[in-house]
Image (tube, rainbow, N blue to C red; front, side):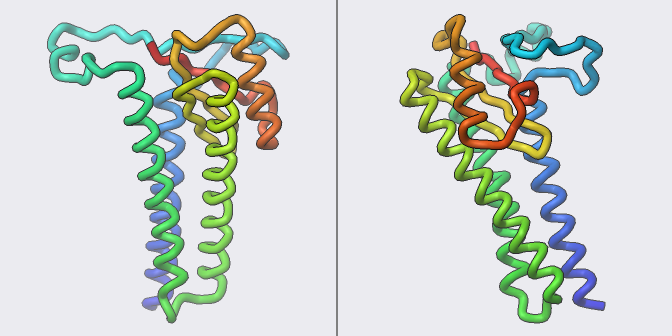
Length: 182
């Protein structure tokens, strides 16, 4: 009975970490969950984070944050979510009475997370070398979201960013979203 509970805890922790990563990806992409607009192959679309709020909401939120601070906070949130998922997998591996199947699932989940972290780091490093000082990359099963400062975007930026992502991952061109932070 105890083995089943520990497996459920691991699966629950991994699902929670994945849910947090998907939420952060959706939150920073600024795209609606359902989109009726058709996509044109090769079309570059900037996604802005303009939002309307009442005066009271503006006072109670972090409206005074600089774009660099917003990106730093997003990077910190992403790192914390990934660390929690890795920690959950490591906990299952350290339990001596976990089943071999649970340990194998934990190893596979940890490997996927580590591969994503490495790819995200590589993409961010390449984009920094190409002139995007504060790029943040979010990889998920469904695609990739790259967040950059609006002031660093030019007409050819979408192609540069998408080519960088494609060179480091197997994400399709149409599944790469670029979010600008003003």
